[in-house]
Amino acid sequence: MFFNYDHLHFLYEPFPIGMAKPLMDESTYQEFLDHFPALERFDDYKKIGRPGSKHTLSEKENPRAFNDFIRSDPLWREFHRWIKSDAFVYEIMDTLKQHHLDLGYQYVPPARRLLHLLTGIASGRLSPKAARLRARFEFSAMSAEGGHLNPHTDAPSKIVTLVISMMREGEWDSAFGGGTDVNRPKDDSFRFNQLNRLARFEDMEIVHTYEYSPNQAVIFVKTYNSWHSVRPMTGPSTAPLRKTLTINIERFV
Image 1 (spheres, helix red, strand yellow):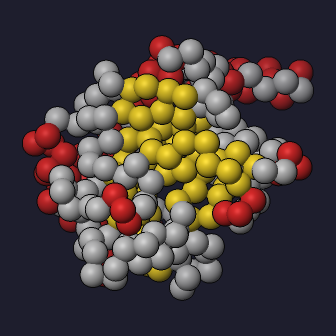
Image 2 (cartoon, one colour):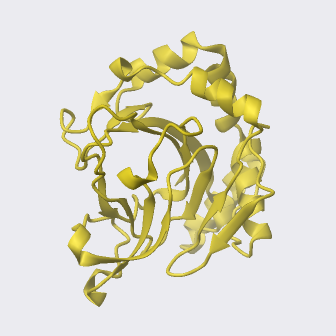
C-alpha cells in the first residue's frame, strides 16, 4: 500500500540484510516527512533506562504519547491500521520468500491456527503455522552529536525489522556518520547472541555499512548473529536529527 520492494537487494552473510530504495513514491515520502512527530513528544533513552543514545516514541516505551499522536494525525492513523493488518505482515513474509528467505510463516485463518497450536502442544513441536505474527513501529531520533546504538542482535521475539530513514534530500551530511553497520564479532565467543546481549563497538568488525540517506529501508532478519549498530556520530549539535521509522514484526502465541 505505502511501500514498494521492486528495488530490494539482500546480502546473506553474516545474516540476511538488504535495502529497498526508493521505498515510497516521492510525494508519499514527503507527506510522511511533513507529518513526522515533534521531538517534544519523545522520551530520551537515558531517562527511561535504556542503553544507547536516542529519543523514542513508540507503543512499547511510551504508549500513551504514541497513541495520542497516532489518533491526532489522519496520515499516521491510516498507516497504523495498515501496519497492524495481516496484509502487511504476510506481504513482508512473501517478499522475503521471493529473495530466498522463507521463514516458514504464512497466513492461516484463526480457527486453523488454533488447531495447529493444540496439535503442536500435544506433540511438543510447534509449527510456524501455529504462530501469530504482529507488527509495531517506533519513531526514533538521534543527535548528530554522539548519537549511537551499541552492537546488538535484537530481542528473540523479533522476526524481521525495517529501519526507514526519515530525512529530506540534502539535509544530512554523510560525514556525520549515522549509517547502519553490519557487524561481525572479532571473538567467536560473541557469535551466538540469540538473547541479545549488548557488545562494545571495539568487539566488532564492520562487514558493511548502509549509509543513512532519504527514502530507503534497511530490512533484516533477526538471527543468533544479526549484529548491527549505529556508531557514535560526529556532527555538531546544530545538525538535523537522524530520524527513522522502525517497524518490527514479532512472533507471539
